[in-house]
Length: 434
Ligand SMILES: *Cc1c(COP(=O)(O)O)cnc(C)c1O
Image (cartoon, rainbow, N blue to C red; front, side):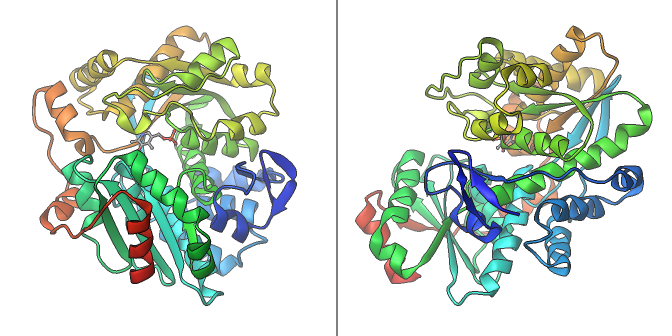
C-alpha cells in the first residue's frame, strides 16, 4: 500500500516512511492510496469472529503487502489484549467501552499498534528509534505504556510540571526501562515547541532517528477502525441500521470509523459530538471551517480548537459537503449539559459515564430524537470514569472506586528528569543521554 499526503496526491511513500515520519514533509496527513472493500465472506463471518481475528483481517486489508502475515498477526494480537464490550444503557442505545486497556482510554489501541509496528521496523535497522512525545496528560500515558519494553525503541515524554493530574503523571513517570519522562518547567505549548525544534535541528537529525507519536500518525488511525467492526458485529442481530456517536477532539477516532465504512462496514450515520469547542459541528451546519483557540472544559481531552484530522475526513468523503453533512451529524454541549447527562444516566440506568462519554451519549440522544429512522445507536465511551475522578465524584456526589489497573500506578514512585524550557538545555540532554 502506498500512502499519499493530503496536501499532494503525487507525494507517495511506503508504510515504513509514513509511520516513521508521522507528518508528511509538506505538512499533509498520510492516507492510504486506495481503501479496498473487505470481501462478502468476511462480512458473513463477522458476527462469529473474535476481536483479534477481525482486527487481523482489517489490518491485512490495508497493510497486508507491507508487513508479513505472521508479523502482522503478532502485532495485532499484541494490540488486542483486552475487550471492547458493548453495553446496553437505554432502549436501542449502547455504550462501546474502549477503556479496558492499560491506561483506561481508547488511545491504548492506537498506541499499542503503533509501538509494535515501529518495533517491527526497528528490527531491520541498526539505529534505535527515538520517539519524542509532548503531552498534556493522556497521550503520554498511552504512548509510554504502548512502547514499554519494545526492543529498538526509546521514548522521551515531555510534560508540563504541575499541570497534569497525579494519576496521569504516575502513568508515564513510573515505568522505567526504555521510557524517560522529562518534567518541563513550562507549559504544554513549551513541550510541543521543544519537540518541534528537535525535529528541525540538523545536529540531532544527523545523529538520531527521531520520530513522533502524535495522533496524526497513520499507525494510530488504522487500529481505531477495528472496534467499529467488532461493535457492529455485537448488535447486527438486532436488524436495525447502526449509528455511531463519537465524542471528538482531534477527530482521529471518528476518522477510524469512516475508514471502517470505506472498507464496506454498512454504518448508517455518524454523530460527531463535541464540547463547546465546536469547530466541526459548526462546519457541518454552515460549511465554513473556522479554527479558533480552544476553551477549557471538563472533557479536556477534547479541548481542541483546530481538529488535526479534519483534512482526512474531507478526503474520505471526496471533499463533497453534501455527502459529508448527510452522513455526519454534529452536536455540541456545555459542561452543565455534560454533568446533567452524567447524573441522569447514573440515576436512570445505574451507568457511570466519564465526561467524554457523556458528550457521546448526549449527541446520540439528540440524534435519536431528531431522526425518524429506527436505528441502533452506539456511543463510544472513550475513557474510564475513574480517570476523571474529581469531576465524576463532584458531579455524582459520591466517590468512584479506582480500578486496580490505575491503583497499580499510584503505588509506584515517580521518576522524572527536571528540564528547563529552553531548547539548548533539551538538546544537551538528548545529546548526553541517548
Ligand atoms: C483523545 C480523547 C478523545 C478525543 O479523540 P479524538 O480522536 O482526538 O477525536 C476523546 N475522549 C478521550 C478520553 C480522549 O482521550
